[in-house]
Length: 281
Length: 311
Image 1 (cartoon, each protein chain N blue to C red):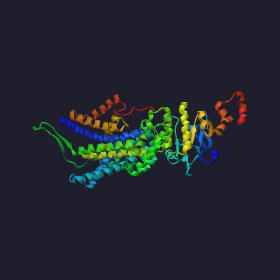
Image 2: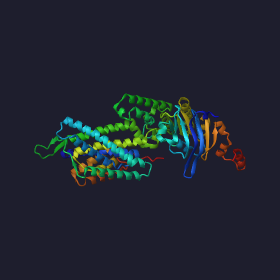
Image 3: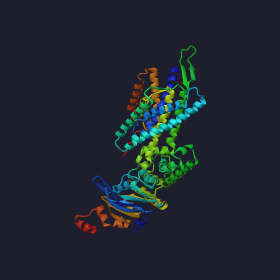
C-alpha cells in the first residue's frame, strides 16, 4: 500500500479518451496523493497532456471517472463539470506548455484576474463595488495582499505594474505558477514547467514547487521531460507510453523498472526476447 | 468663422451619438472577435422604448424643468435596463449556441437577429415615422450675427449640451469600469485569452453576456439622444446609424475603447463639415472614403493595436 492510495486528492479511474479511431489514453487509473508532488512522465505522444486536458475540462473523457476529493470532504466529478467551475469549485488550477499570460495586462492584474470570483461576490457583481461598499474594498485589499505575497515569492514585487509580456521567459513561467496559485487551488497541474529554463531558473522553479508543497495545502501534478527535476522533487511517478500506464511508484522504483527503461531507451535487437520475457509480453 | 463654429457644434453632437453606439461594436468585437450586426437595431429598439416611455409618462415641453429632467433620467434608466435585456437575448439566442462553430455562422444569425428586430418593431409599432414634439427648446446664442445681420447666428442648444455632457460622463465612467474594476479586468482577460480566463475561474459566458448588456445599454442612451435631437424615429434608423457607428469603430481601431470615441467624433465631424461646405448628398460618401483612405495607411485604425500572431 503506497501513501498516495490512502487519501488521494485526485483519483483517475479507468480513464479512456478516444479521438475517432485513435485511442490517446486507454484505461488509465492512478491516484494523486494529498500533499505529494506527482510526476507524469513518458515519451512524446504518450498522452500526458491529454490526461491534463481531461482533468481541466478541455476534453470530455470517452470513459472513466475523475474524482477530486477536496480537503473539506466535498467530492467533485471533474468529467461532468464545465471548465470554469473546475477551477472555481473543484479548485484545480493548471498551466500550459506554452506561456499563456495576459501579455497586455500588468503583472499585478494577471494575479488579480485569478481572484475574480472572490471579488465578484464581494462586489455584489460590480454594483456594490461601484458604490464603494466596505466589503468590496476589504476583499480588494485582501486580493492585492495575496498577489503581493506571491510576487514576493517569485521576486517580481518591484515590477508589479509592468506589462507581463515584458518579463523574461523564466520569470513568465514562475508568474504563471503564481497566477495559478492565486486561484487558491488544492490541485495544481503543471505542464512541463521546466521546459526551456536554464539551470539557474530550473533551480528556482524547484524551490518554488517545494515551497508550495510545504507551505500550502496544494498537491502538484507535473508533466516533465527533465529527469533530474523529476527524480529530485517528485514523491510519486506515473509513467505512460502509448496511452497506457507502464509504471507507477516512487522515483527509485520507476528508475529501475525494466518497462520504463525499454520505453525510454529501447533495447538491442538481441535483447528483445529477454526484455519481453521480463516484461511479460 | 461663425459658420465653422456652428458646424463644429453640430458635428460634435452627432459624433457623440455615433461614439456611444460604436462602443458596443468595439467591445463585442474585442471580446469575441465578431461584429454584432444586430447592434444598430438594438439602438433603434432603445429609442423606441424611450419614445414609448416618454409618451406613457406624459412628458411634454410644458413639464416644469426639474420634473422634466427627473422624468428623462427615469426614462433613461428604464430604457437602458430594457434594452440591456434585448442585448442579452440577442447574445443568448444568436451567439452563444454557435460559439465554437465556424466563424461565419454567428455572423449570419446576427444579421437574422437584426432583421427580426426590425420587423418586430415594424409590425408592432407600424412602419410610419414616429414624431416627438421637442422637449427642450432654446439654448445659448453664441454670436448674434453682427450688427448688420450679415453674419450667422451660432446656436448652442440645450439639447446639444445635454447630449455632449451625457456622452462625456458615460464614456468616462465606462473607461473607469473597464480599466479599474474587477468586471473590466475579467473582460480584458477574456479578450486576450478566453480559454485561459475560464481556467482561472472566470465565467466566460457570463462575461460575454455582460459585454453585450453594457453595449446595448449604451446604445439605448444613444437612442434616447437621437430621439431628443432629431424628434423623429422609425424602425429603420438602426441600419444607417449602425453602419456609421461600425465605421467609426473601425476608423478608431476596432477593439479599442478610446478609438471608438475618437472614431465616432471624427465620423460626425466629417459628415457635418462635408454637408456644410460641400454637398449634403455626398456626406456618407465622404465619410466612407475617409475610412477607406485611413485604412490603406493605417490598417489597424487610428488607435488600434496591431494584431499579434498567436503562436
